[in-house]
Image 1: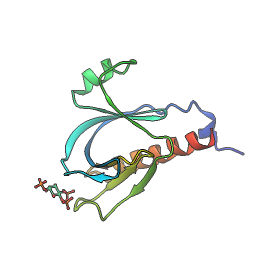
Image 2: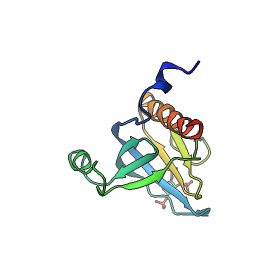
Image 3: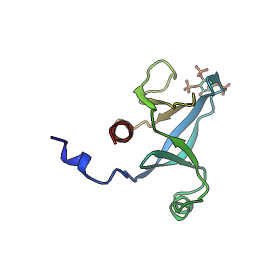
Image 4: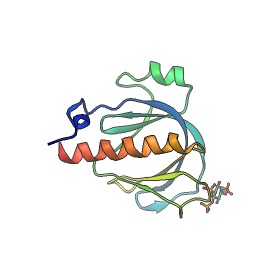
Length: 126
Ligand code: I3P
């Protein structure tokens, strides 16, 4: 039987400031640049907002100004090799984009790691 959680709406919506770095695009390595970004997980997409939390919330409607990452087929994994920082999660998309998400507070990043895994799993089974 499915877990009660998987019977809920697939949309997992949360917002939090995390450190984010894009490290590859189309399989090509990029120069790493960590920035603090308001991150929202929205069904099949992970949204990154450069502006404040207030603006991000206001822009959550379709057409809002966020960078979106398609989570369908993405790989979510802990990494200790792609950064000297602790608590780093790597997201690799089907299109060859690679992102790192990091937070000094382990429970914070753990929650995002688990939510992202869950979102990807629900996309492949749904
Ligand atoms: C990078 C910067 C990053 C660091 C990265 C450096 O230097 O110090 O913070 O990543 O390491 O190259 P620069 O600012 O000159 O581009 P971490 O903090 O994640 O270790 P890397 O090259 O090993 O990825």
